[in-house]
Length: 248
Ligand SMILES: NC(=O)c1ccc[n+]([C@@H]2O[C@H](COP(=O)([O-])OP(=O)(O)OC[C@H]3O[C@@H](n4cnc5c(N)ncnc54)[C@H](OP(=O)(O)O)[C@@H]3O)[C@@H](O)[C@H]2O)c1
Image 1 (spheres, rainbow, N blue to C red):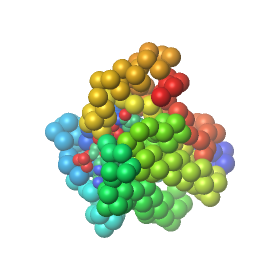
Image 2 (tube, rainbow, N blue to C red):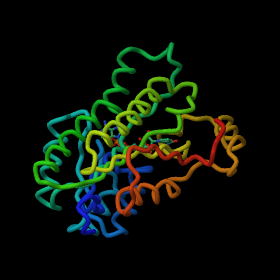
Image 3 (cartoon, rainbow, N blue to C red):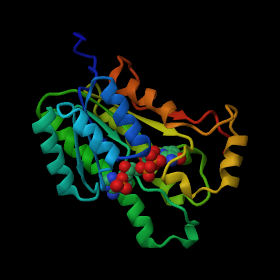
C-alpha cells in the first residue's frame, strides 16, 4: 500500500486474554495468516504454550495480569524485543459477571470495570505511545459484547464496561484519525468459560430468539477480527455486531 493515507495491515499483533476461548481462536487464526502474535493471560494454558513452542519466531506468550500495569508494560517491551514493534492490538481479555446488580458488591463492580475498561485503555495508551514514537500506523480491535447494546440480566457492570469500550472505540478512531483504525466487534453469546454461568434454559432461549438458529461461534467472530487487522478497509470507529440478529 503506497498511498500514505492508508493504514497498512498489522504485522505484530498483541492479543490480551489469548489463552482460551475467543482469544485463543484469534491467536490461532492470526498465526495461520502469517502474522506475528503476542498473547498473554494470567495463566498461560497448555494450548498457548504449544503454539509458542511450535512457532518460536512468530509467537510470544507470557503470564500477565492486565491489571498489573508494570507487568503489561514489561511484556510489551519483551514482545518488541522478540517480534518487533507492535502495530495491532486486540483487547479481548475480560471477566464476566453472574450476579444481579443489587447483589453485586462495590468491590466486584470496581474489579469488573478495572479489568474490562480501565486496564485495556491503559494498555492501549502505552502501546499507542510507542507506536507513534516509532512513526508506525496500526489497528485496534476491541472485543465488546451485544450486551452493551441489548442488555442482559446479571450483567449490569459487565455491560457498562463493554458499552464504555464501544464509546472509547469511536473516540479513538476520531482522535487517532488516519494513523490507526480503531473498531470493535460485539459478539452474541458463545460457549466459553465465561458464558458457562448461563443455564441451559437461558441458552435455549437465546437460540430460540436468534434467526440463524444457533449461538454465535468463535469461528464466526475470528474472520471479522482478521479483516479489521489485515484487510485494506476504510472501516473506522465502528462496532460490528456478530450475533445472528439475536433478539435477546
Ligand atoms: N462468551 C461469550 O458469550 C461472550 C459474548 C460476547 C463477548 N464476549 C467477550 O469475548 C471476549 C473473550 O471472552 P471468552 O468468552 O473467550 O472468555 P474466557 O474464555 O473467559 O477467556 C477470557 C480470557 O481473558 C483472560 N483474562 C481474564 N482476566 C484477565 C486478567 N486480569 N489479566 C489478563 N487476562 C485476563 C483469561 O485468562 P486468565 O483467566 O488466565 O487470565 C482468558 O484468556 C471477552 O472480551 C468477552 O467479554 C464473550
